[in-house]
Length: 205
Image (cartoon, rainbow, N blue to C red; front, side, top):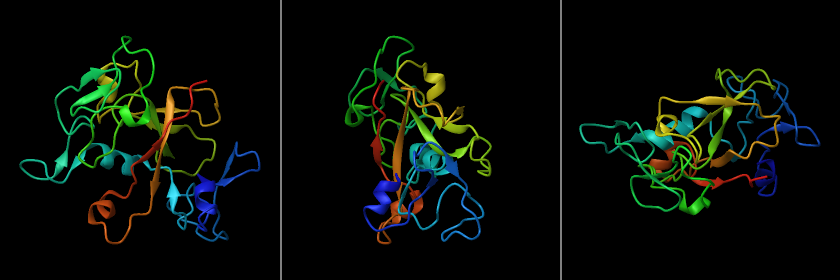
């Protein structure tokens, strides 16, 4: 993540040590310090989405019938997604409670959300930037994860579900991440969303 920023002349998002294995909180003396989020430098252009940003990208629909609001699943619906091993058909998600045995490719990981993000229900859990408690003031805190993975039941895909994982564990192949970015000023939808749609999946170990 930091490389995306520094290679494009932006401030790095996270204060990582040389081995990039531990996070140090930003302090008031650091340029870009944000007292409300000690994990992320506010001058960064690329970053992991917070749980709020990710939640809105997955479940919010500004054009929902009856008025803007949130859906139960990240497919723009309250109907249980159709389980698939891969694909992009509307209303589908990569999950199966044991019948799906591997993640799908990033560009074939289910139907789109109203904000055109893919794979936010199923395929792989997505790291959220924030600690599970949302406070972001302890560098070693467990991080929130959302969306479920390919072997889950539909219960884990719901907007009401979230869990946590240890960020120091490098071997969890059920997890992936999304790259969010600062929206362009001309993009009203992106301004409301506050999160980009580029997704990268950690390689299975």
